[in-house]
Image (tube, rainbow, N blue to C red):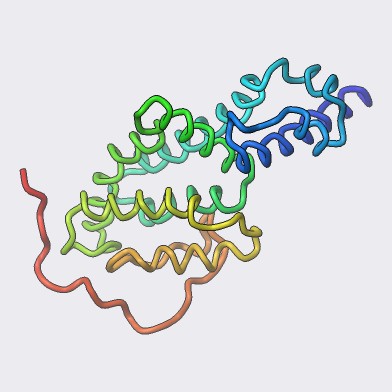
Length: 222
């Protein structure tokens, strides 16, 4: 049991060190000796857990893929009457990109691989497909401005989600909720995220009611 616990701790240390290395240097620039040194391990100990750089990268991208797919599935199967589905999804993804080093590394690696192959990362492709329907449902519930097309708001949300990674540094979990509330308020006519939601933990900032959601609803062209 002691040996197994030690092996798990070593595995965890190596994954965290690898996540930091991949985020900082990318797949091509990542150096396994630096990973081992960061984890206070020998390179031989690293190879005992991960036989190659590819195996180490896969250990980060696989959980990333599983997590965002589960979050998206939860949103798409919540039903049109469920409240806060869109904001919960956006906040969950953005918060993980800000606070979870391994999730950040998974995003970085999949995006880097997609660019090399001149395609979009699967997470971007699936969000592009799913977000317009989720936005439309949120508009019908009065949570998001109805005067913008679902496609336009989806493009804005996708830019927010991905842009957070590239334009901000990792933040601590206790400061992230307030920042996420501020980001969500950039969405025209958006209702505040649920402070009691699973992936949200702070009351949105108080202030004047948002404007910019005036005029008749706009429908997307066929």
